[in-house]
Length: 184
Image (cartoon, one colour):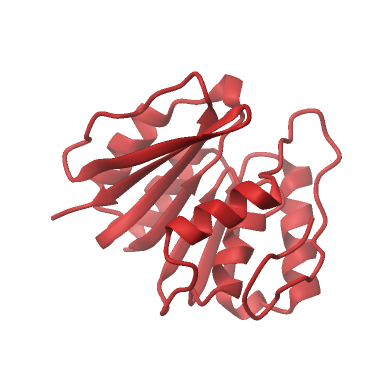
């Protein structure tokens, strides 16, 4: 796997060797980041269920100031830390080895506000409705921030969650990418 664009463009990153991991394909990641505008002028990126950290690292490469990575798997956290070391971006990252809801509570208590939140949980273990509600209730987004959900293409998330407004979704092979904007 590689970083697609930005300051780390073409740099290879490691992935987990596990049946539980389903890395976001390069072409899907490229489409997602193009939909988000291609590049960023700063901001915070939350890569929840980070796996290899590819999405958060892509965000950093394209101009985000800071990325937070969360994964429940110790193997995933080890790979994320390895990739951060290889790219030399330790000063602009945080990595948490914990459950999604616990991480959201911790980040809320730290006063974190994110410009982009990327949700890519294992398809069989998704509880995106609960996570979207927590993000909204805890006011974890900057104005006009975007939540991106990668899910099985059979899953549809088209309702609004108070301040999180459905924008659009698109299918890529077995995956559906859904976008929400945080409107205050």
